[in-house]
Length: 210
Image (cartoon, rainbow, N blue to C red; front, side):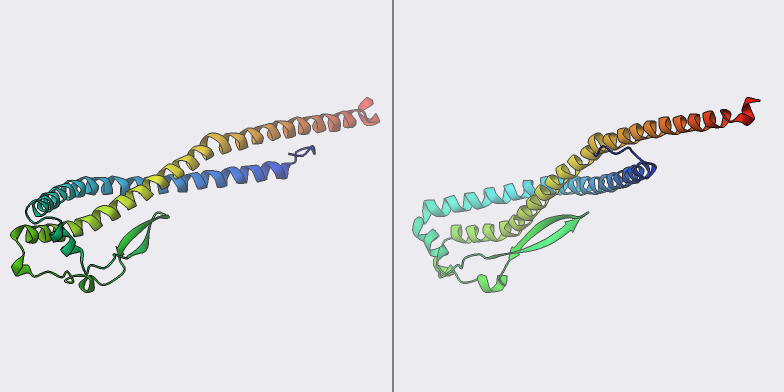
């Protein structure tokens, strides 16, 4: 703020800024509503997915415990041989301007499977049950991880958007409105004073003193 007296152009500029801020606020509210709808739908899917994943995880834990109990650590170590390190690739998606990641395997799934060095004929049913349980839970695991990452990104963006809306509504707009009111009052007083001086100068002429 400078010490120069306010002008009519400053008042017009402030009103334009208020209009721009109100438009930005409406856009942010639309973004917030879109994110909230996406979060609500994903939360319902997440609850269903979490229940299914928990059940599959219990089956894996049971099969793993049976293998450890009847086959020992050697069977677990044998299953680990030849399995390559899992490499991930990230894909970016967006909803209403909010970006969220999706994680997928960086290599072809067919190239990573079938490399465990053990003979299925010589293994027990517990090992086969463990492998079957792992295959079932893997698909759910990817969906569970990606849905959780998406929800976390959407909830973070929702908080940021709501903070921006609150800042515009409770800080920026009131400050601009108050400044418009102040400048309007100053300009009104100035115009009334100038009108008074003009009227006084006119009435003080000899023509009006007859």
